[in-house]
Length: 438
Length: 70
Image (cartoon, rainbow over all chains, first blue to last red; front, side, top):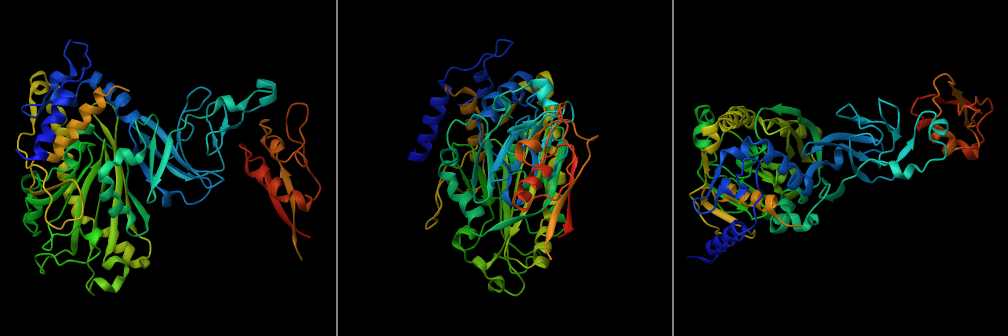
């Protein structure tokens, strides 16, 4: 047995030995995950009590992607996002600082801001009119002196999340278990390569606040690294003339629950890192994607993108020998049976405007793929609602094992036939967060 | 010729937040019900920035800053 595989077994044993929360019907959470067979009971996709635990133990304690700094460039700008089921306002204050505020009035709790994004000098609650600045400070209330006299306004701030910004990506966390560096762990190598190699800016919201009747884990578990479904669920792509789905991929993932896969390249390089525009194996490819990346940060922050070759050759656009387009997004739960999706396109800031437009259009393949996935995730969620469906396991019993290709500079690799490793790492982190003692 | 500032204050819109007076008490005076008083003078140059800030901060949009020729 190799070292990496024995590390997995030790990690599984460590998790399995933890005290496990008791559910209302006497089942222990640990009874729903089988570390020997690597199976998870589908009940976890539909059980309201499990869902409430996830909000408290996972979403309130995690660093979640809530936006990009280029969405809110000016003082007074804001966008509305979610941390779990807590709606938050991501704001740019007068001093330029980015804030993440709970969108609930400190007075009687109404949602302060009712629009998805915009610019306004302050936030006035539509109910009784309390007004807050972009850092969550109470500025005043109607007939304040008559109502409250000389009150101490500092006692009535909006609830604030902690904020961390990495390569322009804004993360928010209400009760994080660690700082963002530790949260990303070794996987930061990939995040930094994707978002930190060239300066990027937002170019349109491609999903605003799209609600889908699916459990968040049905979405996250696939996005983090499932490639096996492509050959069947996305067979339409092949029929449309796209190249055959390649089961061989480069994947990366850690016990922190983050993961991604990227397309196979004939020189074996993770393109954005190496900065050299490698050729795809087939020069006749009908679409100019040279490296496609898709993944997720735990619990669910969608990361991914493409580095694209231009007809005039890679050097024609200069920076890093390619054109960069990345996406950012998230899936926020809305009860156990639904999610809200949002996502952004980011394009290389230095590109001419017309090329930026073309790059946003280069995501057309994702529209086809997305339509397929939007069938699968609600379908799995429906199946999990029944008694027998809830007892049915999700199976992750074929593992490749970690292996780094020669000369590849990145950590945490799973290179080869894309098996269940990355998705299983997602579930290990899920159970870790659900049972961790703080 | 430079620009100076005058203020159009809509007392009916004022709800007594008093934020304007917190920011620029020299310009924004309150009556006994905490409603902002009208201000007919030209804003002194050294108070222009604070007067603008006070107007921008009004949750009722009750204060409009108008530029006039000096």
